[in-house]
Image 1 (cartoon, rainbow, N blue to C red):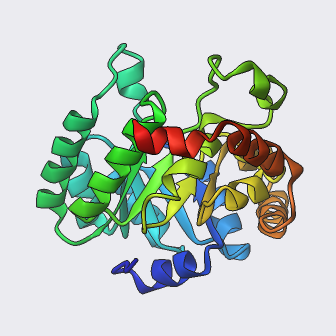
Image 2: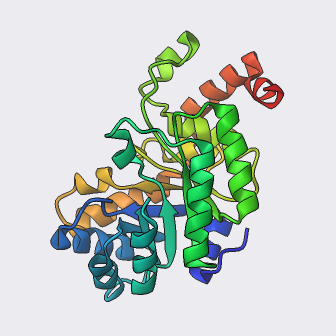
Length: 265
């Protein structure tokens, strides 16, 4: 792994990354400022903001943290890069999902090629779609690594099709954690676990192979900068606390040789 942003590179090398998400569709300047200031005080790794050039410039005007923008629109991404974004994330496919569109691996690869052509060597993170089966996710992750993608992120969407053996874990194990567990074992670039992660599951994500986590909605539940800062610090402290949920999952995978099955597909 070698990120062009030195500050980010150090964070990912330590595998203690905390990405603070202000909200992909959040344009409330007051709330964004609160979250960004709390992230600064708690010494989070970087900020993830809406792909809006005004917001990028606003956050960069007072925050010392690297700023990431998330979008699937190449033009928005290019404009935000010109506005000062330090990291690009291709993900948050809600716009597709809301229309019943589920992008294929081939389509995503072509999109990444187009974006890389536009943005050059800026650090790039790509979210692996949750609906792909695990073997497809691993194949896509490896292909993206070969394309020069720097970071991968897993999506967390509740999966009603988990085997009965895992039913007791469905309240505590998102598809994001499942994907992290497998994908991280087959690539040599960092994996971020996001979507619904909070202080309770921070250590589970790390145990599953993540280099860091993304948190957003849990921070917004706090009413002021002090409480937000305290919550981010709580997450940092919890990241390396043993979590029994991971060992329950690991036992399940060991019993059914899931990784072996994936490799053989």
